[in-house]
Image (tube, rainbow, N blue to C red; front, side, top):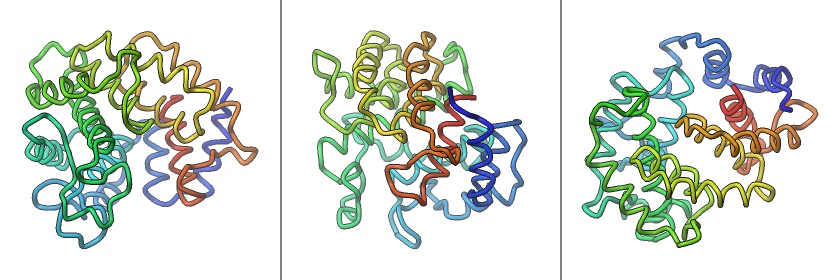
Amino acid sequence: MVDIDAAIGYVVAHGDTVERARLSYLRTGQPPDPLVIGRITADQSEAGGWSASAGAPVDSIDATCFRLNELDDLGGLHGEPVDRALAWLASVQRRDGTWQESETLAAEAPAWAMPGDPEATLYLTAAAGFWMTVAEYEAHPQFDVPARYGHTLGAAAQWVVGRLHPDGTWPSFLAAGWHAAGLLYGAQYFYESARVQLVLGDRLPDMEPADIASMAAALRRINLGDDWLLQSARKRLGETQRTDGGWDSAEGPNFDVNTTLTVLRACR
């Protein structure tokens, strides 16, 4: 089992102001100081997105999804900054239902966000669609009201379904899988979402702790119902927790606190 107290202690000892505010919200639901939200939204562009690096003139799909993740840990996906971000994502969706980064970002984009790359396109489409789905789920938990971005999400889900292989695998990065599972479930492609989840379950024993944490946190956020995959993921996280209470990040020690917060989000 995950040692929650040890994980909390690790974040308190090593986290910055924003990370400790995220911890407070995850533990008690305490709203963060407006200054904490301000640190994130200060870099939001007039259009509604976030750039990949300070001063960059073009907003990034990947960076905007990352910021939505942070804001979700600080009180949920609502409010004016979130509304602006969602409107921006909808406005830059391509006609075929996909998202791609601007060509001007090619020189600095990581592999999973490379403009024009098919694997990156599938990942970004799944990730952007996932976060828009989470926002819609928060507004309408039973999906009984037409979504604000129903057409946007429907087009994205239909495109993703068309890229799945018959065995449920997908031609992209691992993280595209759990984002796609959430997007497809929200768009009522329940069978396709379940197939992706089965593949994720098969891959679970070989996943890095950071990937397991991200997958579990994402699937828990969508509330898929049957939690067999979540239970398996939490068991693996308990087995990979370090003695100091934290978990290893795939991006190096500077991101270990973020990974530990993601575990707490998956287990709360």
